[in-house]
Image (cartoon, rainbow, N blue to C red; front, side, top):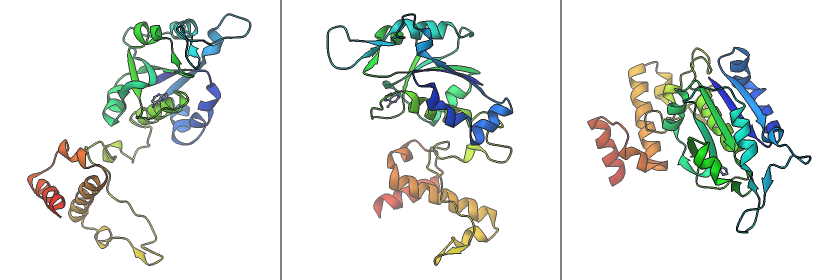
Length: 241
Ligand code: ADE
């Protein structure tokens, strides 16, 4: 999986790719990234990437030419998604991450200032993604969120043992509580069942905890989750209590 990133702030991505699992994944050639400075595709002396909005108003708008030229400089197949990160996009989710992880190449455009010239959206981007209903000062953090969620789905990136299949949201539920040693810390003990070695009981307990936690924090997720009839009865009891 290769991801190209177009940004005014390439340095922001250095940390993400020089540490931890993504550094290892890059070293092992499981994934690769190209970080492109939009300013490198300007042609004037001042490397102008933005300009005043037609019609007036506050803020600056990213110019179309450097963004088009940067994307066109990237060698790519016809069906490679060109994704604009912006608060106007469709909402990012684990499902969207899974969908994107099926591609071998993605191009991400980080917007900035007040916005991006509409022609980028209309004639260059094939998709537009928002990571949530709030406004960031640029698309870089949003791009990092998308890259993190997508790269960790690439086989091998999480290492051989860990599996993204247990993650919150994969099964439509939030994840169950996790504990590690010590078994008792400041008088707070790990639930007995986890020490029992009885894996059927542990699986049941975890599933029940996941349902309870989802009910508490994100009850709307339960409407879409796949639940057994016994689990549905548990949800009913939670709703009534
Ligand atoms: N750029 C600014 N805010 C954003 C958001 N919420 N999602 C994606 N890109 C953004």
